[in-house]
Length: 204
Image (cartoon, rainbow, N blue to C red):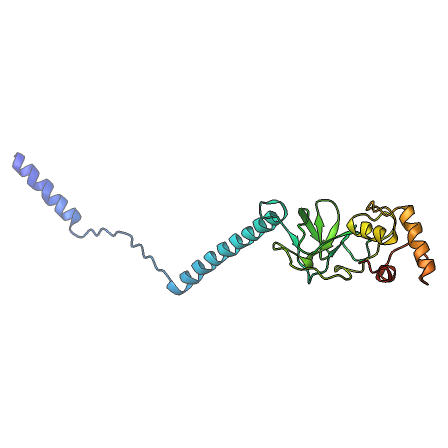
């Protein structure tokens, strides 16, 4: 009886499963090599461009503040005019001789580099390598004009030439000495040592 029961169960299972199909879903992965390669290339190119921008920003920051921030005057031999503002219309306050190390650069504006002392120099005459040689003559970076309030080595040279104490500060004493020189040499008497006065004095 037990054998008969098992036989019947086996026959019933066979009948139930004889025509039954089991289908497993097919997963097809298609990869378009042409389009996939282009997408990958664009992704890597974008990442590369981003890294280049970040590196450039880091370099610019290092130029202002980092260990490689040493900048020098690099001209054709002339000294570099230092001004109160980022334009040749601003009054010069002094000059740096070719090859001189500049104060730390903290920014750029209108083609002028702003120095940590608050003054500006023409950016195209500076470099991380010092210039060599010295040529007497007008400074580069715009016309050179000294007036009351100017200070520095250029003022001291002017004062020596005029025969007054070289304090390095252009005050009323220096302005009066300039006026006297201008009056005695047929120049415009204004107490300002501009290009004509400086050229006449052979002071640049």
